[in-house]
Length: 139
Image 1 (cartoon, helix red, strand yellow):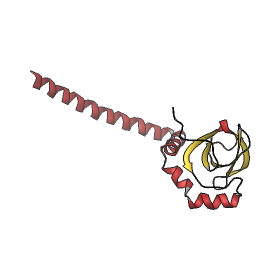
Image 2 (image 1 turned 60 degrees about the horizontal axis):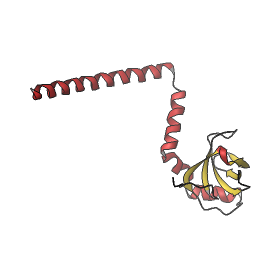
Image 3 (image 1 turned 90 degrees about the vertical axis):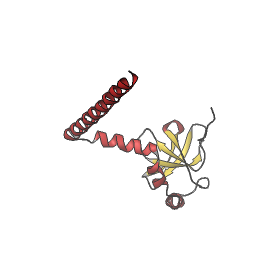
Image 4 (image 1 turned 180 degrees about the vertical axis):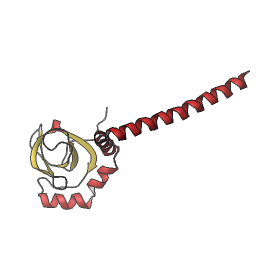
């Protein structure tokens, strides 16, 4: 297995646990083998040392100097449009879909159920029709 995402300065990461769960940050410096200094000025993450196990690395990279200041990171973040890049990923879309499902009301879930039933009926009737035609041609 070849790794493509490495823990390195400038790597954008998704925080998976703790008070900042679900926010994006950028690795600014490595403290030791288990912790990294992260900062997320545009996503609301204050500069702090986090355990590397609580970070999920993304494919997004930005050019930052080691231990660069928050204002510089904010400027680079906006110049590279990191938030927009993140929103385009399938990972972010999946998270948004989960959040939308959690917030759905009973009536919205009911409408989804009815729509699925209607779709299944149409598919079932088409498959039945195709099977009937295939059986007639085989005889």
